[in-house]
Length: 474
Image 1: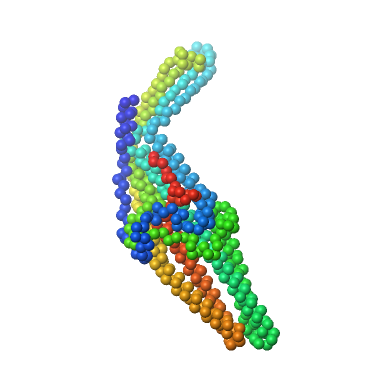
Image 2: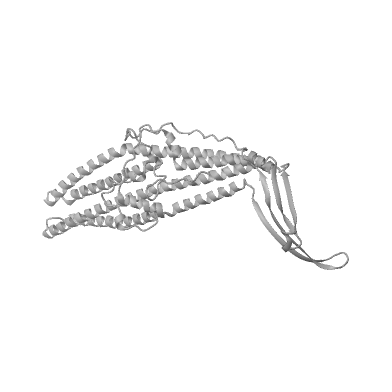
């Protein structure tokens, strides 16, 4: 027992896995300064509760529903539990398994003198079945690999939550923008119908030509087409949002047309932000855990080159009758150590080590690619942020100018100064400018969502807005 305890303690301190060193980030030390500092002492975006960024109470309720009902998130949670169970299985392999067994047999046979008889036997044993002493760290390396796989799925689940929060907010904002487009199309149709009624009256009086009347009718039908198109689009937006949420949404949870400008706050971002903040993104952390798992797998492949020692031991009692097994039976025990030494495997062990080493190189490349992708996403979002406010201001001025032009052209048409062609051109320009303004407002709101997402915000979001609890320490 003392020898076994010493061997167990020695095995727990051994590992042939390479010492892990985090690869250097293949990106610049600072993120692009595409946006000025929004707060002089801005905290980490990842630490912000999502309710401080998504301000609209209806949007908050929709996000909370999604965090509770989304099926992709449920699958991610179940994957965590699966990998956790795999880790527990592998961890159990480092300790001996103790089993108890009992058996009874009866057989009829003939001895050398030709006499037949019935023989009976009964036995009960408890013992250890082939426990591998992990002297070279093979079992420990496999346990570390299972642990890192478990932690990787945990980060993947955090990333799923982060993506879900952003996608729900973006789908909700898109629904809001399409509501504005539908209202604009309906307003335009109403105005065109009024103009058509006036044109029909004037045409009956011989004041306007048939060409003007046909142009007005064409503009009415064009507006009707837009109304029908945006009605369909609005229904599809709602279906897409409900698919993300995982349950039906009641009408009070849908956005109002005014929510586009105020539903999402811009998370505080420091100017000259250190690119090391990207290392805390869930996808980057998941890639790093996968790299650590590949590193541990090399330790298991190296340990396969060395002898493996297994112990089998049991003790119990045996008797020729079940009734006397414990009262008059004989005590039995056995202790069977075994050693297996690899001698010739036709290069299989070396090939397995090469596979493990190449697997680590692959995971290093994936880890570096995840950092580069994160850097590119943040850089794009910051550059877009720097110009969106100016674009919106210019677009609002363009809408105002087109509104004045349309008012003048419509007045001149109604007073008979100009034909309807000038009014129609002015109306089309105003309609396009308003549509572009809605698109820009949606882009600006989505950029706020994107910045919060790409900087790792919302990764620990729960349905009630509280941080998620990670896996308990092994």
